Length: 552
Image (cartoon, rainbow, N blue to C red; front, side, top):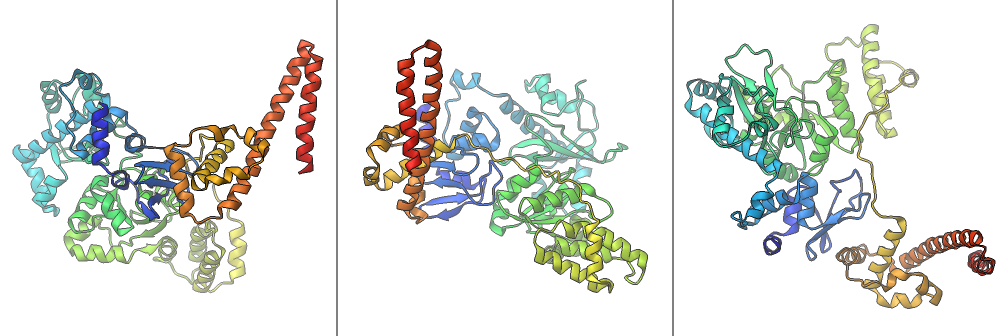
């Protein structure tokens, strides 16, 4: 296995692998980005092409090679990361070996089942009588033949067990089919009489499905795969595998609600588009989008009076540093309908004219309202003031208050008085807390070691006592992480001498405090033993250490 791992590493560049998942920027000889594993505003995640390593120097302190990165960002086991990267590298794993068969994971089994189900649904769409009717319906909605094929759209027949029987015939177990979300506990097909839209993971592998009712009396228009080992609706974004590069290239993400809206947008040439696929916008969705861009353009059904889930999603996006714009729909049409009736250029124009979120709210609040009516004025103010109160920037907040006062012909002071009465609900924004696996002492030791690599003679500036105290300097200094950190320090163009002085001063305090605590613990132990001569020696040592610090 080791030879295969090395072969994969030799064929893949870590910059290319990591760059598929997050937006990297050149930083000297390295690359940097916002860390995808914890929430941060200043990039602390670095990738070293020369070392073929990555590391976060911020809150989470995670790091490793391409395998560790893929395992962590995909949430998968090593064997799954191995197979995924082997495929990317064009390395043929020794699948004939029993070892590989034994470590076939549950995730891989479910991926296989979803892949076979996708083929089954596609065949039904293209060969069954009702499937062809469903395909005709899709084409009337504007989807082209090649688009249907590209997005692997299919059809689930009206029978109760066609898919289950097909998968059983291929040798899959009932439990695994149920675990993939394709059958109920009573073992009949979950999807029946529905047009099927496969939902793919980052690498284009089907992990779940959305079924739209077709020629059926089923009240549920849309049905999604339940949460499984592979699929979680709070994290899945429809079209991510096809949109990720375009989002990074355009530095913006167009977010729509429906699968067909997303597909039609891609077909029209706007390929930086994703769909939330029948669920509210979640922190996990935002975390994924943020890897590629901070600019979010929403095409949701929105109003100020209702749709609290959408407003909550927007609040989360703003709190997490997104620049949010909203597409203003002049009719009840969805994006797919606009593209079909008015053409691709109209959709592109609407996106280009998307309004910043506060402008959108402002314009919407005045829609169909009479500014001279006291009742309408009260409604407008009650809708807008909670929004204005959330604005952190005082200049921007003042701008909107002034604009509202001018539009309603009322005093600005009166609006401010009303705004004081507004009580905002506690923000329920789920931001991943920063955590560190290393102590301050360890971080200082690593920084000092990285500076020694840059200028070895700095060790000679230490006193003999400091050299004895800093035992970590005796360690062999060839850690890839330390080498990478020294490269970053060089690039930052900082005053190494000043940084050295600060780090030495701080770590000396930490070491001496640790030493004092150890002496005190020893004193207590010796007192229990009755070794009073030892206690005297320890007290002298403790006082000597304390006096030296007092002199400083």
